[in-house]
Image 1: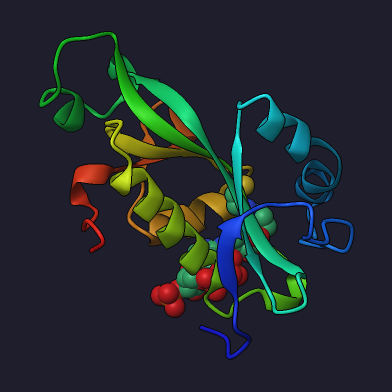
Image 2: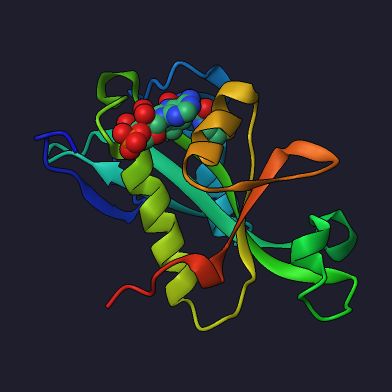
Amino acid sequence: MSDVPFRLTSLNTVHDRAAFNSGSEPLDRYLRELVTQDVRRRVAACFVAVTEKHRIAGYYTLASASLLLADLPADKGRKLPRYPTVPAVRMGRLAVDQAFKRQGLGGALLADALDRAVRSEIAAYALVVDAKDETSSAFYLHHGFIALPDAPLTLFLPLATVPIPR
Ligand SMILES: CC(C)(COP(=O)(O)OP(=O)(O)OC[C@H]1O[C@@H](n2cnc3c(N)ncnc32)[C@H](O)[C@@H]1OP(=O)(O)O)[C@@H](O)C(=O)NCCC(=O)NCCS
């Protein structure tokens, strides 16, 4: 990863949300204008990578979710109980500031999200993401995610395959 030391932590009021620029206006606007409300209402948790000066270099959100068993690839669904839905954790958003892209931070944020999902005492079958386009889905495929057969921009990674951090 980059030499810039980042701290991975929950978003708080000290962090400078206004300066964040991922190159994706909806992702930047969400961090600027909407995320604190979602966190307050407990519909999302937000985690950030911050520099020593409290600059946000990247962020992601996590929330509970579910997947329809029927939407999973047959070889995965077959091994699960016959309930209509499977519990999951959704990473609703993931973005890295343009100044910090391609330095390993996106991968580090994804690893942090997987760690949190795996460490939780509440079981979830997979981390699920909704990629905004094919470039984003390529990032998740690169990290081992599996696309839903009928909705290829929705991808999941079974958490049983993720090592439990010590
Ligand atoms: C997608 C995004 C989060 C990646 O962040 P990043 O910090 O540039 O990525 P990293 O440097 O951590 O890359 C980690 C690995 O993923 C690979 N990678 C990065 N972007 C990729 C892409 N679009 N497609 C395929 N692989 C990609 C890198 O080559 C690297 O591979 P390696 O570990 O084998 O060397 C960032 O580009 C971003 O914020 N994009 C705009 C928002 C977005 O698309 N969010 C995704 C969810 S909607």
